[in-house]
Length: 309
Image (spheres, rainbow, N blue to C red):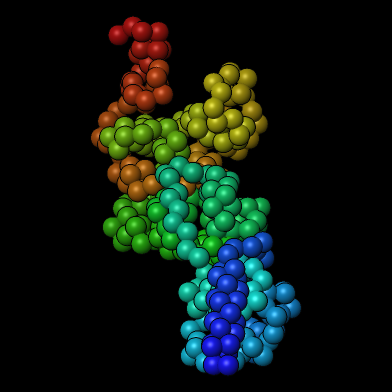
């Protein structure tokens, strides 16, 4: 009789273990949001409403017995239905999944939105782009490696990136901008153009000098990077017809800086915008999209383009 009872218990335990194992196997997931400062009772109701758990009461009892009431973290979760509720509670205690993502120098807001979306940091790239542009924050999304929560709030993500910008844009930069009679916004606009025109820190300083020299003389910047931005033509070679596009971003036609940054520049480009190299160069071009050739005079510039000294 005792053996029968023991065997029966073993079978029950084996079944329970199997259920638990099967329960932890990922199934079709559903996105569930747990608001901040939400009670266990409300969380149970949310989970039941999303068909993630079988019983609200069992979730509350399990949370109480595991001393997890104050350990549940708010945020967006990808959860799947659970018989035992254990995988759900385990995930809520661990918190939202963290994603490591690198934003390179020179990315536009559209490129950033795409990378965040592909890596499941955001749900809607259009929402991200709209939020950034409506708040005039293009240029202030600092290029860096970040750790974001999966499916985080767009505002949280943008604020984190802008905060990183101001962590790098120090008081000396603010003082320097005042010295050269630039606002922070103008510095970022110029830095964004420099970011797209050059690669090395030294050439960025030289190109910055050309742009500063042109602004002082009342010349147009004549930056191909701004025309590319206006046309969204980032790969193919620009034509003379392209340079005629009627856009405030066409610095061949309109004097001064464009209306807003054309990308999100890195620290080297920001420094270059603030501290241009001492030079009287007024022109530059590149034949290989890498090394630039600088000239003071237009005739010299044309001759060098033709391969003459």
